[in-house]
Amino acid sequence: MQTRAQWGVAVFVVGVLTLVFGIGVGVYADQAYPDVIPYFAHHSSGRIDTTELQQAIRVIQADYVDANVDPKKLSHGTVQGLISSLGDPFSAYYDPDQYKKLQQVYTGHYSGIGIYLTFTSSYPVITGTVPGTPAPSAGLQPGDQILKVGDKDMKGVTADQASTQIQGPDGSKVSITVQRGSQTLTVTITRAEIQVPSVRSTTIADHILYVRIYQFTTTTTDDFHTALSSGLPGAKGMVLDLREDPGGFISEADHVISQFVASGETFELRDRSGHVERHDVSGEHLATSVPLVVLVNANSASSAEIVAGSLQVHHRAKLVGTLTFGKGSVQQDFPLSDGADVHLTVKRWYLPNGQTIDHKGLTPDVTVPLASATLEFDVLQPSLGYAKDAQLNSALNVLAAG
Image (tube, rainbow, N blue to C red):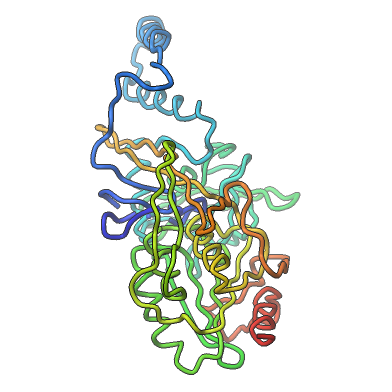
């Protein structure tokens, strides 16, 4: 999570899903940047005994059969091991090259293939593709499990880590092996410059404003304001689509909520000491009276869950779709002196009623499954219609019923 004024990142999420954002201090839906890295000689839970670690390093340097051991690789592997020992799927270590690539993704503009990824306990899973990018052209689909990137096995790799493996120079090629049902497929894809959309809107049905937020980036507030300003006049209702949204800046989530709610709390952050940081609605409130339904699914995560959950708690909107991802934690980025990064869980966020959705997700008011993400209404191709999108049609029925 990230405050827009301070930085420039999460979330993607990738939270969770990975088409998510560079440099500075702030909080992203699963990301933040500190001014300095704190050092504590003594910690309340005790000091870490580094004796065995130092011994192991000396043994490797003195006796390993290959005398040309790269000390940087040893250093990176040591930090990576520390982070892995936490057993936290959202804490990670990025070497300098990976961190540079991750920062490019955070801006929503990078060179890659154009996919959204989510973290699983086994392999990263594609939850969607960016229209007009190499991934859909190569036949990659939502639901594909990424088994390998090149020759590197992706088992246990987080969405962000997989993203850094997939990225590369514009025009270069990358081999992706995926599992699709009982099939194992390998495709070679030429990377391209990717510009990830944040907000897109159109008018559907009987004067219903449809707005989709793909992810919460640095442009979301302005893009969302534009969509409301141009689309609300004459609108009888509104559908806010947060399906497949991996999250992003919490400041942008704040602003989106504030368009629909005139007063009160948007969400809370709590650290390990129990300190509560309350966020309240602010700014303009362009859409406080328009009837509203929010679409969510299992890939709605982090900041998307903040928006959906807060609007549900405020009784401002009904949720339609399926149980959401359930990511209620906040990660902070601690850039290291060599350009690497420690990506560490430091806080959890809570809804205005004090509830957490971590590992639980949000339960929709109206549960409607959808067989495949490919059936979702494509706002970039509105002429294709939404007849097969059962969730969107259900949302329209909820609006019609008042």
